[in-house]
Amino acid sequence: MRDCLALCRVTPNEKMTQVQRCISSLMQTQPLRDWDLSIQSNAIDMNNQTVLAAPQIFKQSQIIHIDERVLRTLPIQHAVNLGHEEWIMVYQNPKQKNARGRSNFNAANNVYNAMRDASGQLGIRIEEPHWIELENEADMSSLEAEI
Image (cartoon, rainbow, N blue to C red; front, side, top):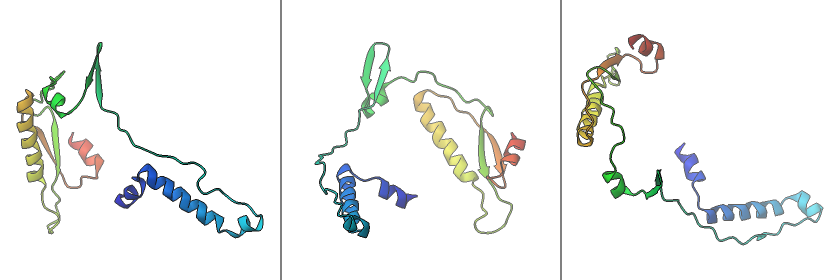
């Protein structure tokens, strides 16, 4: 997937270069030479530029341009508190006793602690979740049964 992304994320000028390469390879084909056809290599001269729109929030009759400073000062519109066992944290604890079959409880607990610490600064209360331990995280039926 990363290889595909590297090929897809090209600048507009690189795209035009690839189009010109394609045209030149087409010109070398036998049918085009037999019929005496030609394709103009620089049919269009384009100067391309990528412009990213600045993120904006539209609030009533205001337009707020967003940057990191603005995001830090905006109030939270509606905070949702997560009470004791009102939400779930799922982690895998395989029953096989091999090197790769170790419990992911510590990683899940670290995520919970990071959420709790960050939410405290935002005024959101997060209490202990309902912990669900699965043998196979891909098995949705066992997750549904636990819930």
